[in-house]
Length: 530
Image (tube, rainbow, N blue to C red; front, side, top):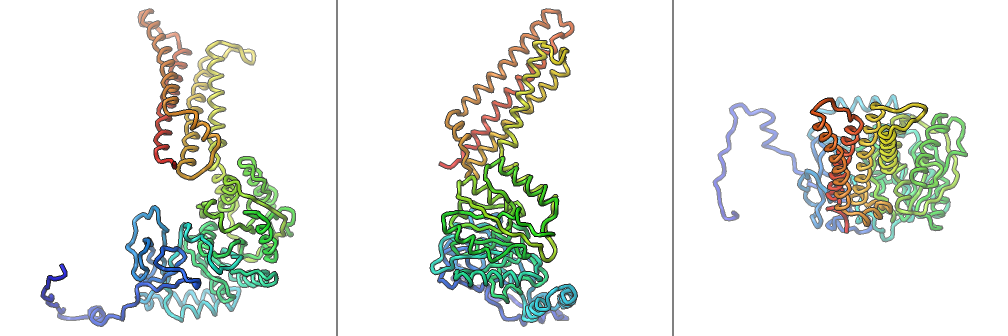
């Protein structure tokens, strides 16, 4: 097609050209599609390394997905991706662009006026105003999921990366960065300070940058989202995590680092014995934290006393093992659970907890439920297997008592108790089947290590489940057939075998559940890792 020559199209000029036509005839000079900002350590931008930061001019407010394809030069914008399944997904967000600059003058002035009134720091307002007047803000490509390439050791990188999530913390973020830097310098620790601006609108990011921190902009709000973005840019061998509200003492950083150097994979602070007056509400101190931490330890036996402590540290090379995914406050629980499942070495020591500066972002009941929900869905034994087995066992016992006409509590149980027992047995069997399927999904698709399920999988095959389900179904069918034959012999009169009829129906239903659940387990195992 390169040799085909076409005649130029005749340009049609409108009878009354307007400003839009004149603007099209005199377009502004095109900008570079992507400005590449490689790391100072010489990372190759064509290697697919996810630590590359690029700026893309886009229409204001546009949010889009794009994929970085291996070996694809970043001098051109990637084709928008529908659903990138196995690549690092990137999100581009534009806050302000040239095409909309004139239209947003009133909005910008209103935001500046609001900041003048509301910002607790005059410095934050000055930095924000300078940012607005300096020109259009370009989009920043962020990373949603970490990859192994982004987690490799950086030659000549710092020893410690202090990651601080930040959402509208203009009053405290600068002081947090200063204290973190003082702790690193006082102990001669080579480190970097990464502040993750999680959608702040009070100039927090600019304040952190002015103090020398490396600022990462993460538009998707959430405690976990902020930390995942910060981990993607952390280059240190050890990562220390702390909140941006001055509730934690940054002078504890060397203590966390020394514990990691001594062999720990993760270190978690324990606030519960050193809470300053007014630092924690009574229902968090005496109900929320003890109950959730205790429940987590019952389910996963972690031994961590303060699961939700926001100051913790970990070795950077264990991040691929942890495979962290949650985006909300349950991120703290996920770290502990994943560390326990991967048999990592977790240490803890007491730290102080100070009253926070500024407004709390925590929602007691919503975030508490998210933690509890996360604990349950990651423990199929307690969510499915144990309750289901109890229901099924109790239902079968009730049915046997009714059928054998045993007297319990001084009276003989009848048809109503039999129906209740049948319901318990049927529902319990189904819940147990769901629990086994949950174990299979976690093992095959989430990389979970489950000794009980591995033993059951090695011992029992699809055929065992089919034989068991078929046998139970056949037993129910035999009982039902006997009832029908007896009914025929009585001349199709009144059916007087209600108890046996309920038992037959129960066995038939349970047999069908076992039979088809066995097939579902086999289907889940088709994609298992070899």
